[in-house]
Length: 272
Length: 298
Image 1 (cartoon, each protein chain N blue to C red):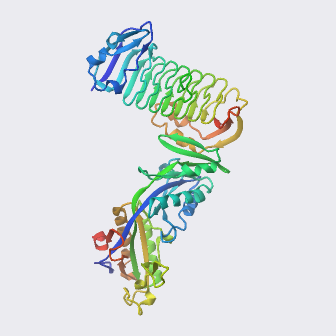
Image 2: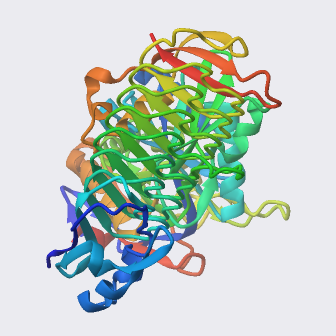
Image 3: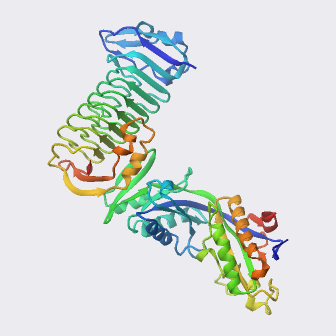
């Protein structure tokens, strides 16, 4: 069976809400049915057929060709199946995703994998701010699954992260891991200011020493931690530097904080 | 049936259902993984008074362990799930958590989880950290030598306890040598443990006693010093009897272990003083699993 393929015809002026185009909503529909699904485009509702050329029939593998950054909510609340996005994705890619896999061969906008429950999001480009975060006003971010960003990511990565893993091969902006409740963020590149701001628990695993360690994180010394080999082993199936044994280690400098926060049991683990 | 001059009795070993689990202990070196495993499986020869039966299944190479360090797999058997959980928790807490450089992982998975680090984590006094890796939860508990890493749960499975056979020999040294050979062969079989000291028990028991407070007592029918005054099972030339007890996950695991064990004994043969192989049973009234020696060796 061929993947259910949406090829973008043009880039609209207004943003498009692509949340109806997920496996669980398309699996029993014909191409004609899908073509008639109405998508929110700014204030207007437009049929899928106006924005995309459709082909294929296998909703378990949805492909979007010529994707662009006006396409928001790709894979929102996805349950099962695989989505391949060739091009950029807009905001909220993988928002609330429950299972399945999204691969973006381009960049993603803000709030990628926000409040994600399970599944895998791979971005073979850069990501905007708030990857795996809670939506504004909410206090529980990503609760499970894994996000791999092969490029750089913006600010507030993992804000309110509750569980799951965010892996970033490139650099991240300010406030990485802010207000984390638990979970793991691993960053191979550089980190910005205010690392782990308001962090309660969880792990920030860093390959490079930050320019400054926040004053509210206390040095707990250098250690060889037994869980790190286990963690790296779990990355083996990824096509990523994280799976490369040359980038793996178990010896770290451990800082604990944010001590300005009530619990303050988060940890910065910095490769030695 | 006679193999290499050794008479195989037409009888059967009687075994009963148990609950079992397996854990993997790793450490910086095999020596320390073994020390921890020996402590964990200590005083666990018989459910009669130990609460469980436990033993070392085998040594694991670093490639076979979750954290890539040398390891040892330990199996624990008990009569019920609650007893098993209690034994597992206390033994993990006192023998593995305490052991230098150790880490503890599930060695078997089932839909009935048994707490491993799930309760031990409280030793961390709030400093413990959970990590969910590939759907499995681990606890990092800060301890004085660094961190104790333990999986949150392991699995509980149905199992069988009490598989056995008896080695009847002309002398005590010959019986022991035969049992040592059997144990060496049986230790290569997966999914089984021989819980008695060194795998061998010299004090086989019968059900009941003349003393009302005891529910088991010496198996006088197989005691060579009582040949003249009891309903003995022993012929004149038998001077020593030793037993090997096997707990295993399935009937076929115990079958296989008994087969290789008896074969190893029979290889020594009558020339080495091994006269008979028998098995312990209670007339088929106690346990639903019967291991007939002739069928096993057929």
